[in-house]
Length: 566
Image (cartoon, rainbow, N blue to C red; front, side):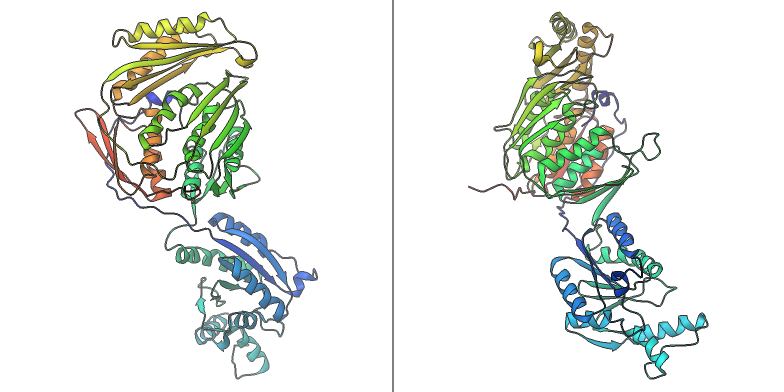
């Protein structure tokens, strides 16, 4: 999930997080809005409250699914409230709580819930106190004049009910009966009360947890969207390049959102008009057949990494055909995903039947490559106990060339071997030369290397040629990157730390343990995001002798409920 350049960007200090693992899956929260008033239906008054509520629900991650406008008649209001309450977690009403004869919302709410109306003493006292401070002459009195009784009608509330006063400067209450929450129709009052009341409601319903996790900035966007789907926790990401000359989502990020929609069923994605905010409410991972043309601004590996995390937990086997750039210096190449990422699956019991076929290669900038990713589904993953990486026993690699002389691949191999032969004799680098239609639209060449230990740990590096670079430079630099990666130690290299961390969290409710080199900045943030989405933290113990860290966590017991049992 990050480029080869991140191999050189590691944090030098070690740290420790003391942990406890726990699985948290959010319950979907839906809302409906019942707008009450003849004046809305006949056009005398423009409804402003729907816009306010829709924006507030979007900000808080509540799924506003239905809006109804009903007249000031008891049957219409009662029928609407009963129907909406049967289908949604929250029902908001606005209007119909004033002092006139056609303000019948409280009465309709009471009838819908089988309750009686009763004057609410605290509300009457609150009305009198605030009105007296404002020098209002007509004060509420149930036994007073017609005007005083009409004023008191606004405190004739369903009983029993929960009464809230979200705003200290207002006497107007928010009345809660079951799932129904009654608000005034005056836009200013509605906005003030809603803004103050909804966070309290979310805290009560969610038992202190937000219905939506909120982040800022485009960094780590992909990992957060993937974790949202796996954890079934809605996520909202704001300030996506909001200060940039070209603000908002990039084309490759929009394509990622489309890919996530194709890989799931029921996922809802909302993008703000400026593209600087996105909210994802996750659905179920379905798998199946996926076909997509990837924009050339990123490599196919950018999208494959998301599928690698999601595909094992789908309803059926995933068969994804992706077209675009197969190798670049920003994303993992399809070669490393095939020879290292998918091989790392085996540590968690996921490797059987997984396949990545490279039909065509496509170099930057025009691409033209094509791959097919096949991944069967599993119900659970195995716990991990991998703390001894072993010693390097062999090095394998792939030197590819598209629309250039085949000698380019051979020159990279010779240069890489010149660096590596001093350390180990068992080296084999395969040359993969493509011509014609299978070579994509642009010339290019590159090298990917994988060092395997006696215990099955994999260390990787790769490099693609930029304009003007010689094959010998690519071969030598890729080999040196591999040696740098090997020197870090551990059972997973820097490029695959995230995969180990994720699958440890998704493991059964047993302790998983592994050893890795120094955590990269990406992995540090990934640990924070895993805690946010799964409420799972790791114990991280530095090992000064080997300059590595031991990571331990308790799995969440994640189960793929979509997989059919046999």
